[in-house]
Image (cartoon, rainbow, N blue to C red; front, side):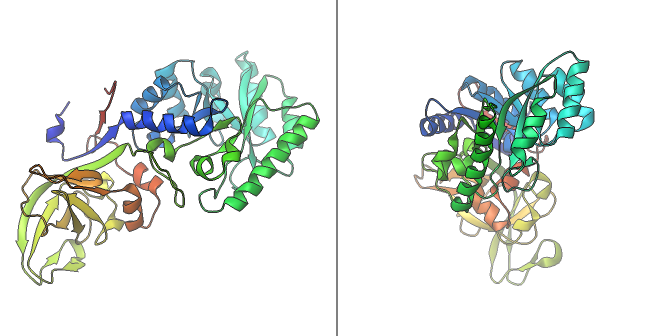
Length: 386
């Protein structure tokens, strides 16, 4: 293991902040509502193994993933002790392993249900499934207008056990009124099923945005993703939640640039006065998007420094003129906080939301886009960090 002091670019993850955020969510939802932790996409770029292991210590009731590889990794970590829901549709060739590992599939069509039932019969098992109802996302799930009828037919299949029903809100972060209508459509399906003696064991609908904006959507369980990681969907307020992730690099070279000098590929930036340019050891291959060229800021010595010129594969250049002293090896913060050196008390911060704004994208893409290779190792802090 390379010592952290030798890293050129790395991510730090605060596991105590994760525990803090889980506790805040528990306070918000109350003791009767279960918590399903969304850990797809390598736990939103934070590292699936460490995040899931910490969440298992927090006694979350279930996990949600996007693919079978993630589900099997969770099984390896937690044995058979936690329900794991596979969002979206399972591919036909995944069904044998999915059934073998007791991964809960999402059912959106009778054809899917028939395939799962046949595989369960082949393995001499009964498989727990969850049914998705499409109330406006237009992605997967039974359309809500016909869902009750289709679910009734699905329930007649052998070797299947319906364990829950859920929907996914497309705009809970920006349109509460529309989301409230979608919740009502979902609950109508549940009532229609109850009318024919098919009460769903578990109903869930609330993602992070709905958890904050629409308390009545918490139902039997909530499914926070971004909020677990201390970040908030656009348009929401999340007081008290603590970001887990910091994204950092180092200064590799410092030079003085006179007026009229072009910087980086295409010379999209030309200096208008004498400047101090610091070259930093990260680029778009590390997850610092090329869209941040000439737009983003970073922290050096507790000061905000603007990125100048195009972001390259392995390096970026920043205007460090406001920093009194810059040296090769100095820490550079892309996302996170930095205290002024030499005992200074001031603390500066750049958030993932700021970076997303500069890149004209969303926080989710920023987090998931930070390269997970030996180029950008994850370093964990807090109790029981490995």
